[in-house]
Image 1 (tube, rainbow over the protein chains, first blue to last red):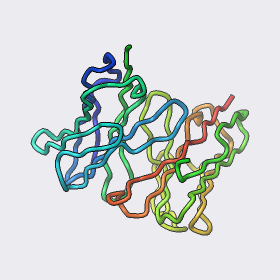
Image 2: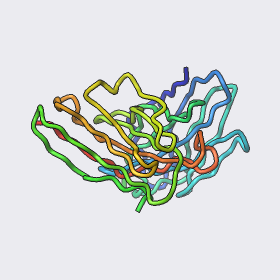
Image 3: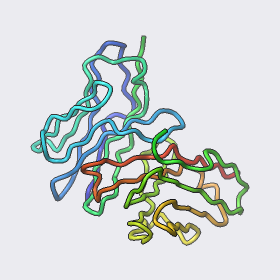
Image 4: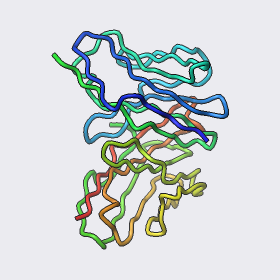
Length: 112
Length: 116
């Protein structure tokens, strides 16, 4: 069975600092991995997805993630945080039936 | 506009009442999913449809829950005899391909249910 673990339920960075949100997955088959962002009282917006092409995936709003099979990780990064990046971030894996299995989320705070 | 409309956005109901939510994708999507998200948690899968056929239901979906997608376009999720534990955000998501590989999944803004 597939699962996702997000390390750190809350991450706080200063504006302009590096953002690093951690995600580890467990999957018996090559995974499809996703990062979503959720603003308060909103649905989820896709940031980026890994579908077995390039291991370094670039997404929207300057975010990127690197798939590392040896570490079963798919960490999300952004070189320079902006105040508008403050939100909840979810890592997810798609099982072969097509449903998404989400981590518990990481709340990102950005300090001025 | 996310491409998926959910109605209502907010619903407050008394315990024991029935509620129905609607999910309306703007364009055709083969697969439609319902998720439930409680405070501080990631979304949890409830059920999904391939066109009008309901193909999988989570054990989270008790017999008080029923979902339909009668014409393979919009979908409804009904909760009968609501309980306080049903309070959550109910999210609808669609995709045009099986695992969201090519097109990803598009989520609606959700319906927030509060049972008092």
